[in-house]
Length: 195
Image (cartoon, rainbow, N blue to C red):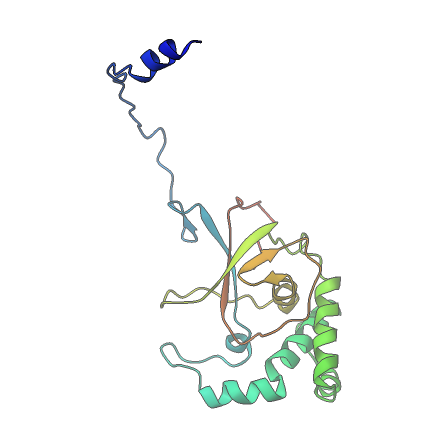
């Protein structure tokens, strides 16, 4: 191509094609309570360890002194560990002997034991998605918190900031006092949804 041809093509000011694209709804989709079609996200579960073990009346905030005390004693982590170990053993609740054993553990031992529980928990069998977003709970929309502490440990140990990665190696759980919602872009697989 010569420079003259290139210059002629550059100055081609013909009108752009006029086309109209129309969209029409083929089928109305019933919106589920836990889906936000505009964002493409589906709610998977809520993890709120303090609410499971120390429920509060609706509209009441947790005492900040209690949260500060929990940072020293790791009481929520200890409760989470006791319940997760009970679930592994096929029990509904942790018995007094198991709780006494966990209360006698050092903080490092508790954290290591929680990571081991998360390592033994199979995220696929628990119905967890491949990838998810962990968002702090805001607002007043009431959702059921998961009572499965093995599931909570599996999610929290595979948390990388605000991201959940099912295939990630479990890390020690940093905090369990924050209420988190797990969201995913994956469609729900019947029979695999966590509860």
